[in-house]
Image (cartoon, rainbow, N blue to C red; front, side):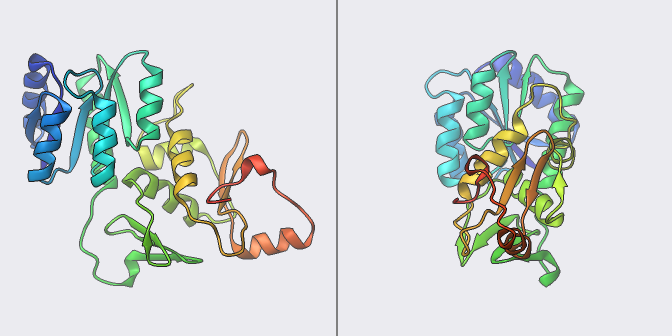
Length: 249
């Protein structure tokens, strides 16, 4: 299983290559974003470990370029306290982040959690397909589309969408999303789920009936709304606040 490690510090790369090799991973190295993009053009990787502070091409710029062409999962390696970089990275489609210095066991746990979400076994039947009112989710390939058009979701965004669809019209808490999608307990001030759901909100197309796909429940989480639910509430004259509109609304 191949990973790409992008970090300008040769000593850190050497330590991480040794650690990851012990876990059975094959690791390619890149000392900056430019080299990373060259390697991505030639190889398929299951995961990218991406440092932020690098010469030639920094991590944020590299992530922008990666997301133009690839949906490979990205685990950002950030300096502790660099909240702005973390938020920007999540907005650009990073799947998770880990602040330096980090515990070796935590790094391995984060990597394995992401890989579990991205396990793309070959689809054998329609059992791998979810059709929710025109939204088509292939749980084997982690691809989502609407009316034949790909939504371009990251694996993490796909996981969030799959979970809220599986509990349509029921509240899904941020804690549950973090645990089941990111594979970690939601910690105080962690905005990862907020950012992933915000990205999902932007990528979902307008709904045919112009209603919301899902809404935010302040202090509770999110709820995916069925067409039947929308019609029932519209008939009763109940309107959802404009600031809660999502999915092309």
